[in-house]
Structures are given as C-alpha cells and as structure tokens.
Length: 92
Image (cartoon, rainbow, N blue to C red):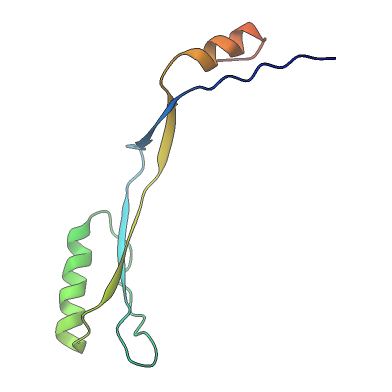
C-alpha cells in the first residue's frame, strides 16, 4: 500500500499584472425588456463612464450593469511546493 501525505499550503491570490483588466457596461433599463446596449470593453473605467453618460443623454436610460474582469494568480506563501516537488522527483 502506498502512503500519501497531503499538506496544506497557504496561497495569496493576486491580480495578474501582466494582463490588462477589462471594464464594460450594459444598459439594463427598460420596462418590458432591457435595452441591452453595451459600451464595449476597455482597459479602464473612464471610457465606460463616458459611454454611460452619453447613453443616458441620448435615451434617458439610467441603469447599467457594470462589469469588471481581471486575471488572478495564486502564489504559495512558502517554498513548500517547490521543496516537496524536489523531494519527490518533480520539477519546482
């Protein structure tokens, strides 16, 4: 029988600075159905906010769903995974 040891390794969750975050908005105003107009995707909130203002001026719609997306990386808080990999024949 093979014995296995499982260890808890704490990780930090960090924003991946190598990938641009993405901002956007979709108009959800409407009585029967949502408007559905979308701002498109941008690398910052400024252009999305300008789109919202312009859309409100053109249509009177005042309710938007804002979306923010980014990528995250998990980094071990110790060198434990690398040490275990070396101990058991794996690459760090």
